[in-house]
Amino acid sequence: MPLARPLRRAAAGPLALALLATGCADSGQGPNQPPPPDLSTPQAFVIALKDAWEYRRLEEAVGLLAENYRFFPARPESIPFLDPGVVSWDRAQEQSILELLLVEERTTWIDQVLLEFTRIDQRDLGGGMVEYDALVQLKLLIGADSFRSAESLITYLLQQDADGDYHLVEEHETPSAQPGRLPIGELRAQVLDDRVRSGP
Image (tube, rainbow, N blue to C red):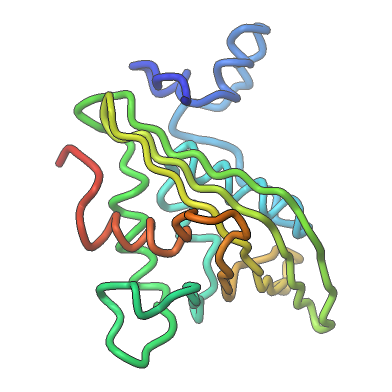
């Protein structure tokens, strides 16, 4: 189970704890001014996505999404807010999920969002488009005693812009090969539909 998040934002998250332990946390950047993420490669983009979620950088997480972003869940019929026959949700819907998932200030202070990637494959489609396949795990510690997790195979469609930065255009989800694992899309939908997170 993940460690409880400490009270001070500057020390929140496993990376910051490691930096504090080695005396390397003072980089000249204030706690509200993280350096801009490196989006120059698909691998760097995935790290930026993971960090934005785990450090609850809402604006950064939303900024990683292309304007025409879509999420294609493995079982769209299991997503409460999707109408019958609709197989994806858009950037506005994803932002609504992230606004609940990546809340910086909680009443319990021990909530955590963990996003773990295991790369499987990567394909260059030309024209600055890349497909990146990964086994992804999403873990939520909600309050003191509620732990939820989900796992999916996800193909990320990334588009490189004129500045050389990648942005996320589409996520295509396939259920995990592990039996009984909740797909990530359904856990993300629960955050929005069922308000599984405690607090305001």
